[in-house]
Length: 138
Picture 1: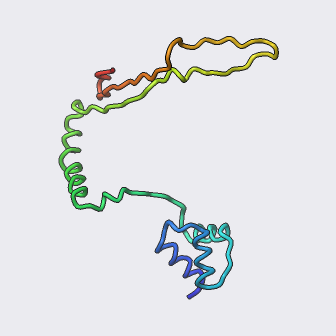
Picture 2: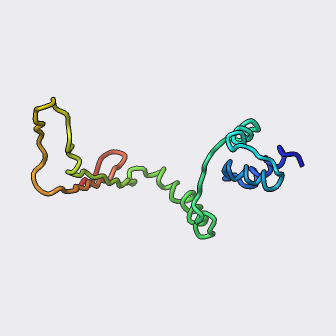
Picture 3: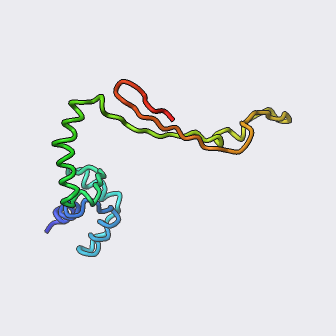
C-alpha cells in the first residue's frame, strides 16, 4: 500500500484525526517521519477540506428521531399556516457594573466621571416577539 493511499484511508476512516496524530500513525506503521504542517497540506491537495460539524449523540435515539419527524410533518406545517400564533421568547440583561471604571486624562489632572449610586445590580429584560408586535416586555 502506498503512503498516499494509507493517508487517504486513515483520514476517511477517522475524519477528526489531528495532523500530529496522523504523523504519529505514519511513523508507527510505516517508519516515515513527516511534519504535521506538511501532512495538513496533503489532504487539501487531495480534495479534503477542514470542517467541523458536530451533532448531539441523542439524535441517534429512536425517540428523538420520532419527535423530529413529528416536528417536521405536523408542527412546522401548522406554524407556516398560522404565523400569527408564533411567539419567540428572548432574554437579555443589563448590569450596572458595566459602568466604566477607568478612563484617560492629562498627566497631573484628576479624571472625574459619574456612576450610578448604590449596589451593583443586574436587570433582566424578557419579551415575546411576534410577527406583528413585541409582546409582554418585562
